[in-house]
Length: 197
Image (tube, rainbow, N blue to C red; front, side, top):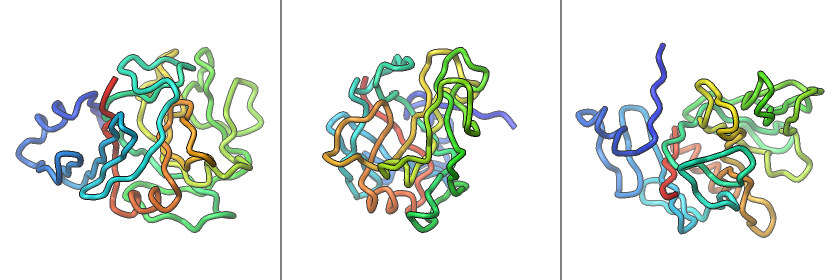
């Protein structure tokens, strides 16, 4: 199976023009795929619904680099959903869902062979723990960025996760309030187009 990734919504629409139609100017449907749009004004739009969203402290960038704090511009497919079974019920989603465990991590070390991949803890390379005490990762959508295959320094661990108290910017991810994230997943979200940069 060959995976195809799109950096621009126009490229995606052109490929499937006969099978796609627009839900609104801010969301689109293609076959079994439902995409939301994240805009620089801080809103994620899915169909007729707009949700306040947080994104990277480095803004939105078409030239994402590891550690720049930016959210990458482009079409980011939703690969799978992870959740803390001890804190939240299993979400409804259009993609695979998996419960997290205390041994789950994500490698963010550009020189490590497991860069931008899930790892089991303890792990010797630089990584991020997914089992967090602050609740931000109680529900995580793993977004397809720099993963087919991962390229050194192009960015890692781009997730759709819960907002932190006070709604601060993220380190490059997209964040929504719990009820909003649960709703967009339940409505069949399969990807996000991040506009700007």
